[in-house]
Image (cartoon, rainbow over all chains, first blue to last red; front, side, top):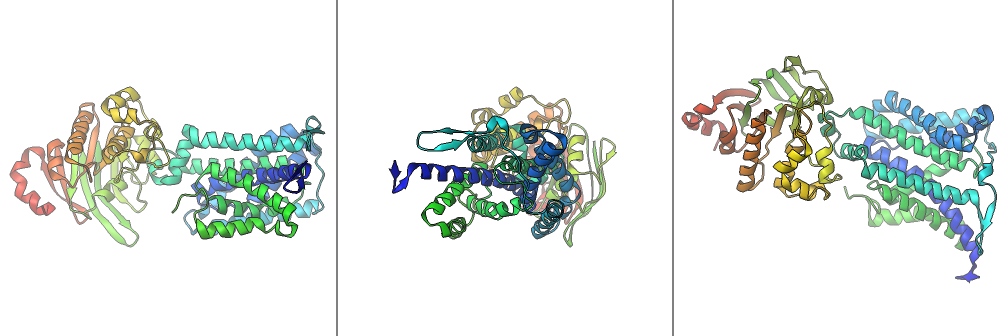
Length: 294
Length: 230
């Protein structure tokens, strides 16, 4: 079967690759957007913490003998806790300064974490097996679907949905949205806002560690795996705008797919296409597709 | 209940409060009157701990709060309905109402609040800022009645509202007083303030310059005209 001059199987597999990358863009930009919304910190360490999530999964398997599903649960908790400590003792010191200091500080943190892991593990990457329960594939008729990849797309959508529900539909989320608008008024209602900031940073970072575990069996566990993602993720955030969670998710998945189809149509342009979209969006809607105009 | 003495505060380099002193007794409605820029709103923010530069003494139920953070002051039992109402645009009416955590027993329950402000029930699921100005003001007052705070700081609740809504807010404040709340009110609208308050303090250039009990308002009309420039 041919569609637009391409075999359906090829289009299908490109769509899948796009959705996989999109899933990571969505999960990472979601955390970035939540953190930026409340803390006003552009968290450059996000990619490094994503990488850390993958390494924690690797460590749990090879040191503690705990498999993939344990890692999916424990790595976000461990990295989230580290994030809470980072926010409480280091990042919180920049809140009274210009935003640029938060950006530079988290960039420095990213360089330190990545440097340490490069030193310890080199850059060739460590293998992480697909868990036995998710091995193999299934034939959809027009294409072959590796089960693990389908699982990643599915679970990423679920994680995005859960995050959306927590932020938009729960009292805790209402507190978060209110503090994003006017933190000092929220504190005047008796809420310990610094604790809310710590919790938010930890949650955003936990989400990126969760993505890191999902990524471990697909890409090798590598100290550089975060930095290759994070630049594109920043472009995704710029395109989607900081305003809405759904915006980050939709933008993340769509850009993954656009990038992947660009690879099919004009391979040399595929690494460029997201940034071209970014330029176009910045010209037409500086606040981003889903952002609220400041 | 609230004793303020020698309160000073500054924004950046300019000092706005130069030693404010006054008291509010339990169960009273007390207003701070004064022209624009006299320091009324700054006094409210300082009581709530929202200005880090404040100094002097703020005692609430005998407890010194001058160095306390806003969340601690709130949990001591003071709640603010800020200037411009502070309704959150990203939250529904119901979420705005339920946002302030309950800090002590004795607040009004949701049914009582809905009886007092029926509009808030009808429009519970719409965005908070899509309410009319009067409804937003009701919401801003209603949400601090829930929390169990006993001293309410109302900063210009009648600002920009139609006379019929102003009357409604007046009734609400009287109702609040009857239920045992204490109210410190900032007002530009002197006739409104005179209709509900037990005592008035007049502020000018960052200090309290006069105190007028309700019984003497009629006799002090000329003096008040002079103070307020009306």
